[in-house]
Length: 144
Image 1 (cartoon, rainbow, N blue to C red):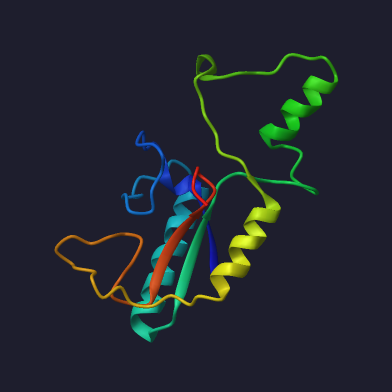
Image 2 (tube, rainbow, N blue to C red; image 1 turned 60 degrees about the horizontal axis):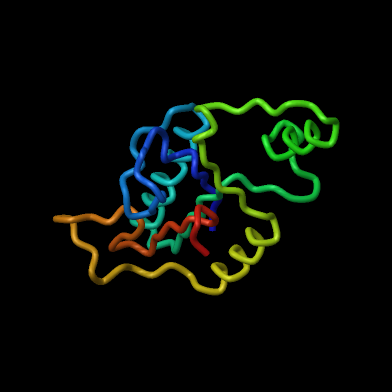
């Protein structure tokens, strides 16, 4: 089991994000490194038949969270009676995932090792599965 990020969806305008959609246009080096991580995991899975499962996390928050994240910045400003910087004319949406939900997802997925997808076809490949023991799941992003 390895950690990935919703950042790999880059500039995709298709909502909600789906593991079944292409994620080949990362917009940052961080996102590109996470995409590279997924590709290397798939290669290990294919070459060594090593079961690999990637979890794409969506803005994880909770106790001991990073103070530079929007959730903490907004909360601090609200409590101080200060204005909040809002971008995209207030039309931006963001998914937040509580750390306990991430932990629950990790525990559940560790009990179900990835298996090859018998229906996978190179004619219509699904990025979330493979004929190797490989899969990817979103943790957050409007889906359990």
